[in-house]
Image (cartoon, rainbow, N blue to C red; front, top):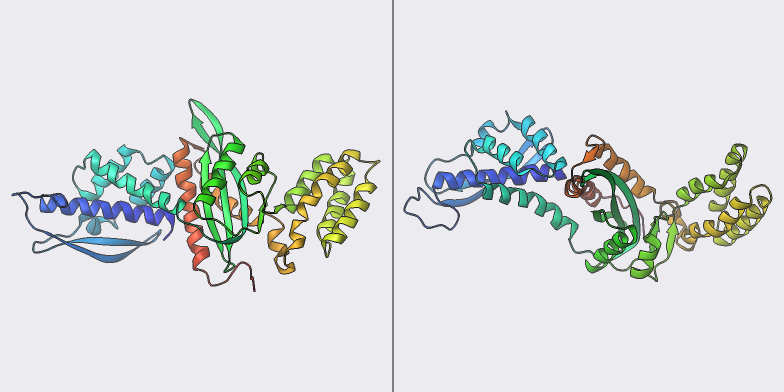
Length: 365
């Protein structure tokens, strides 16, 4: 199931349990002279909807007639439920909205404690995924993106950090996501420490752009792991140092020729020649190339059949485009929690797709 399916299933399952308790006239494990019948487990049911199949657990009773009203009128209200759930994800799961939806599904008033329990289950599902144990991952891709958040009457940028790992089986896995308003180096350090505390080890290479604070955080948490700076971003960064528009295409061609070298020795040789080429016409570019391009050479020391996929952070960039497609409709998030909730649901969906595919992203044989 994707993240939205999971959330809808959790909410519906909780609503049906509340309805069974009302039918029995007792809460679970409660003793009462008013009891009408006894709970008798659950029956699994897969319900097809426009957003995919929902995995439901239908509450059963021992001897009386009981059937959740949601399943009778659920299909009629499916569209409203789906849209409301999407709105809840975006708006931080407003207690009032959850209560309104659950009352529509159940057909009776629900208490604030019922609502709290349902909303907690929604967030617990994503929290459990974000904090799951990790293991050995050969390559670690890191990236940051930014979303607009309302905070204390202002609209500010919230950093979203994402980590993708390539496991020993060659498959991709989304290892973590974090949304915070804290200072960049602190955020990166906390994020990497969290990955490490969850058991991430065996990393042979970290691939990323030169995000502010990341290099210092990596040095503190994973000091012995080599770093591959994204070659695509290096080519983009170089354009800021080109003094004339007429030079831009030539500079881009020259840098590509360096990165397309057959080995690291040839890349070093070409870098010296090309940086000297621009010493007079573009001295700042020449100096920048000599200082920065070698950070994109680390991939040359790894298996040649891996080069194309580990020399850039394009793997994360493609994921970011999917996130942007989902968050664009929101515009400005009301708080950090709502932003992290929606992005986590997108990442969980993608992660499950990656893990269930037969094809590996890379081969370590």
